[in-house]
Image (cartoon, rainbow over the protein chains, first blue to last red):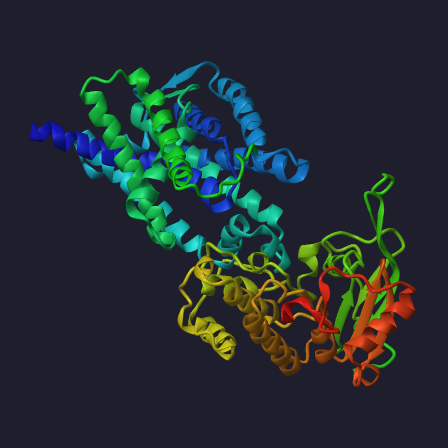
Length: 303
Length: 281
């Protein structure tokens, strides 16, 4: 029994880290930039697809993972350029790129999926190098190191002069322009970094599950939102570092709840429905609370 | 100060909104204006006179109609977009929410302001030296903000935010300071504090300033030059000597003569036979 609990915990911890990249990406667009970016479902699968194809062609798995980051950046670039330079609303721009990426991912993989069963991945390389035998041990090791790197880079970047301008763009775009920042550029940068992180998550997940699939990104945006909402609600973070940790924590708790539910017999197919309902509740509760207290509320936003 | 070369020159500035429709408005009509270095200009005028449009044109929120020229220090900037003009123009608006970022700390807001118009790089935005600078800039306010650098700006009151916005607008000493009714939404006491602060900053930094106000008393008491606008044109332009002994009633007479109309302004009310600005009530 303790064994099962330990396994679920450590596995959720691993998933919290790898899906944490997605959640941090979603956090960057939705919360920091105020840019509701739906590219995520497409760029997650794109990261998995590109990495899988590169690995099956003999590319070093670390390089292949880095390449995923690069193509993710490009996907984010596409969405943000549609928004800033062609003035297509952010939601629509994200959906357009997400749909386009579905076709692109099929082309990249030359089919609906690519298997990595006997291929060298960042996980198998690490296990060989460190002599770690237990799967969960080296999985945690790799995911942990990657998460620490991403955490430190972002924690530094968001406090730099450019990072500050990026955060301020989501807070008060008019003020930021008044201080001489091209807010188109900060938006493009932010959405690109976000999708780079999401694709990185896709690359690591694909190697962990030993295949990439064209449908692997479906629902990622909702999962990311759920993780962000849980993290914010539970940890009420202040400051950049704590916010990033809270998002990782939120992802861990989300994955933990899901793992337990699956153990208790929930059908895996119901997962996305339950996640969607969770997010709906989390978004609706603050509104309903205010409504009960008869506070004035603005009309619903449509874009 | 150079006599023949002004700091800001506006030539034939026209702005038409909703062009070609039934709602067409000529907000600015061939405005020519020379602003000298260290001028502190108060602009008054009824609603729709074009005061805010004039500031928006100078700041680059939108361009003037073809043929209009904006020249700063001998350099034409008419074609530059708003963010490229930040180097020249600092601005405080009526709404304190516009000048400050609510979800960021005072320190982070100040760090944004410090780099006005400069290249932003990958250095960490705030360090010990800069924090000292921020504290030194905030302490003259007497609001204690210098001891609350980590407080989120959203937790400050409207007056505190507006005072902060003013400090931020002037922190990196822009060529030109634009104030758009920046005390209009504040209570009388806070308005006075922010006005005194404005006076102090403008005098100390010798900043060239254009202040739009609805309050005639403020316009008379502050600044070394007074401009009155009406229907998109400048109808009165007085220097320090001309405005020195003026009363509010003189101002109304001057306006009526210049515009050829009865003075109508829904924000300026008659009270006990004297005209006073609404913020005095």
